[in-house]
Amino acid sequence: MIDVTAYLRRIGVKVDGPPSVESLHLLHRAHIERVPYECMEIWLGRPTTVDPVESAARIVRGRGGYCYHLNGAFSELLKALGYRVTRHRGGVQGRAQGPANVDGGHLVLTVSGLPTPDNPQGRWLVDQGLGDALHDPLPLVEGTYRQGPFTYGLRPSEVEPGGWRFDHDPRGDFLGMDFCGVPAEMREFAAMHDFLSTSPDSGFVRVATIQRRDAGGVDVMRGLILSRRGDREHSLTARTERDYFQILADVFGLHLPDVTPLERAKLWQRLWTAHEKWSDSH
Image (cartoon, rainbow, N blue to C red; front, side, top):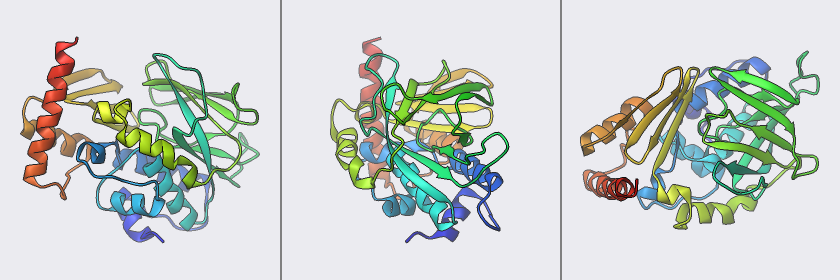
């Protein structure tokens, strides 16, 4: 169903042999570093679906996406390579307000059948769609985990019996994420995807967001403001159309070859208008 060879070429990985913990980590790191978390299709006025095959084809063409796209496509890649993958319904708890939840606002993956001495049950939390969070898979074992400059926690969920809670680093964009222990089908995320991609109350509709995690930290583009967290801290604002698209290419690997000059100009005007409105309110 997906072009595995092209997908592996896109993330710069060659894998041989049966599924292994080492290969799972290699695939996860390569994907998170090369395929950005982004919502630019919304800002370009191009509707998407939660179909993993569609998402995988778009990734192969050089694009990214958010959780439904990234984890949906990655789950298909892993299954094609022989991994035992399960999709789960999750929900992200933001910083400002709102209780923990599993409302389907997040698609989560687990991989099973890969035991290690520290993870004898062999289950792993695999997540390409948390933006500024995981760089590597986490053993699905309660505890505290360090990845680069960030510290994460895993524990039983307090809102979903049999589920799990991921606690983000205090510097992260959200407090945490809860997910169900039972499997979910992609169709269960369609309604929330429609909300996130069209509603004026959606963060993706309000702010054009791009994120890219690497071993040292995370690069974040919100509107026209680029920032770095982790191994170093800095921020800058793109002041011209040329600078903006150069940042997308250089920092996030987003060259947007299928976006015409007219579409770029319209997108820049939307971004600049939103930036001025934000600046006037701060």
